[in-house]
Image (cartoon, rainbow, N blue to C red; front, side):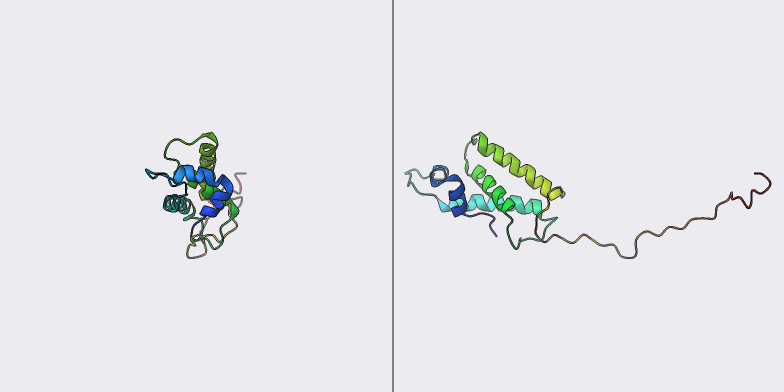
Length: 142
């Protein structure tokens, strides 16, 4: 399941930027190249899934808005063939940091998580030995 779409990217970043980043033909067509965008979306989805897989059930039933926003930032960064400008680079860095926080559990998503592994039995069993020095057996010394 894709976390973002071409339409959402166009709404956030504009068609002109998408055309500039994806129209890589020798003879520019002036159109967004869907295959380039789909490749970047698949790469972003794989990166996000890699961070979510140990903590959440994949595929997500509903994509949280935070994940959509992170996916958009990652996709637009991946579409750049050369070093992107400051804001896009900063958004990508923030997205990676947020994904790290999600995978470590510091940020929680409102979706179904993976059940923690349960241990058989009732837990730890502790027995204590008899105390060697008590008030009863030290009678006369105290």
